[in-house]
Length: 323
Image (cartoon, rainbow, N blue to C red; front, side, top):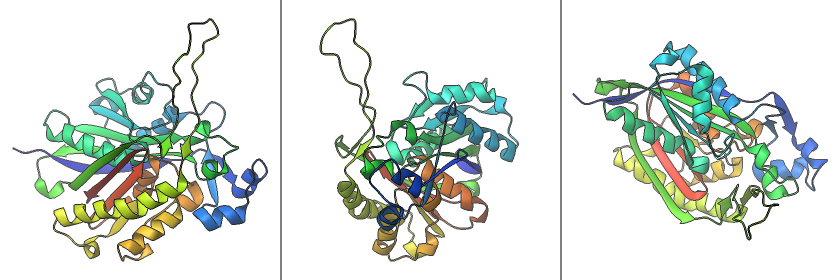
């Protein structure tokens, strides 16, 4: 008997510290007027002091357990998508596993930049459809603030911290299947967006110490890619499911900035009312943005919804879901 994937619960979390545009303008050459005009972003949240990516992800994991009524011991897999992990090793997902006591799960991280949540859903779907796994968490969590160069206004003003995630469960009822279609792609381009590059040593010396770089993006290239290449992928996924754009209840895009979302909406000839967004208040939360926007409307889902995200790689993915 075939196994299908059911999307059961959603959760989201942001740190308490709010940073508005005026505060950023005190430490870099920018202004609230410029940031809002170019990005639509007004505020963002930063994790401070001892709060890290695993802490944000753990908050979401606990919400998923509470909302679903599933015990931590019943979780088979925890998949965390992030480009801002607590460390290169162990995986942030393993820290979440320990925090919630999911003793029977296995856990790993997935790095697909801002496309992480769509890649994570598609990956979890395959594990469930294998018939071996019943309860899978997909959590996208980012503490982007710790990777920013706050002298680089072309990047730092965009990003915020947050986490969102889903609990997926196995079902044998095809009517409960939540994953309708998908398309994942990448272009093998390491220059347009990159972060945390680890430098090799140049000599054997006592003063060698690991060095990483801050987040970087070529903003104009990202905008061009997001508003031309990505919509074509979106159309393909919709067509593969034998639907039209008018059949979609929502289109939830990567929360890169409001201007990109507006451009994609115009490209698809759809009203902005169909595009839930949180970027004005939360900024670009990388892989967590789509997950948090979906969590915000999850209780209202009645029809097909397209999730689309894009980021470093250049990686981009679209997953068509229903509740």
